Amino acid sequence: MCLNETENLLLSFPAGLTAVIQTQQTVVAAVGEDARLSCQLMQHKEVLQVTWQKVFPEGEKNVATYSKHFGPRVTPDFREKVEIKDAGLKNCSIVIREVMEQDEGCYLCLFNTFPDGAVTATTCLQLYELHEPILHVRESNSTQESLVSCSATGRPAPTLTLNVTQPHLHFSQYNTVSVHNSNGTVTVTTTAVLSGFRDNSAQVGCAVRVLSGHKEVFMMIPEVKQTSADDFTLSVVLACVGVAAVIIIIFLIIIINILLKHKCRNSLSQGDSERNKTPQRTIKDAPENKTPLIKQENEHVRQRTGTSTKKSLNSVHLKPSDLTPKRLF
Figure 1 (tube, rainbow, N blue to C red):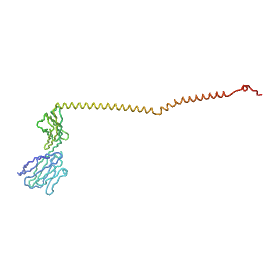
Figure 2 (spheres, helix red, strand yellow; figure 1 turned 135 degrees about the vertical axis):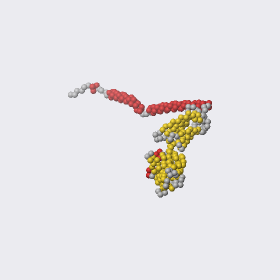
Figure 3 (spheres, helix red, strand yellow; figure 1 turned 60 degrees about the vertical axis):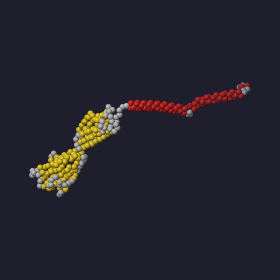
């Protein structure tokens, strides 16, 4: 976006001749955009060459030239930035692509005429920078008020304007703060209080301007309703529902704990019954049953032995002659 302030420059020469050059006194362009500088000779003169120069503190430096013999030419230092448009000896324009801060300044347009010499005019390029504004709307302590804040960054310092779509709403208590950034831009923040009741169609906007640059952003405002008895009743009902839900959850947790404990007890009981059915206890009891059996068998053996002994003794009958000692010789 460029804003051209066009004027006719009347240049006087020692010979008393008057030349009229139509040019842009100031060209305003946004950073990153293309800027067009134009210069037109309004009198009929024999022009040999048209030259564009940039003005530096130490002097002028050629940017581009045009002549019938050599055609359009851009000097090596500006070939990446400048392009000649509408090349002609009476009307010549240059385009500076993607202008940056170093491109800002004044440029000379020279018509080299014969036999009067050079006729010049000056065009100055002024840049601006503007970023998208940021808009915030939040409720204040009062139900009938909202706090609206808009922030924008630009160079030079942007101008912010708050607006609202509903006429019965109004802003008050404006507060503006500016912060200068290290890159040359300025961040401006405007805060205001929006008063009055509104419906869900209310919309607030923030318009930002920097020189010829303009940006605007809108957003809906949350609807604020008056407190009524129905609202209070609804709040009480919602609160009661919330309490009931908490009680039900606690009750469910208690039932789950009881079921888990009951399940654990059943598992322990089943484990005990399984251990009673194992053969370990039978093996343990076996020696106790074997000990009296051994004792009984020993008793039977002793009784049988005693009986047989008695029988053998009773079965032997000794005669008196057998008891009398016999003579060996």
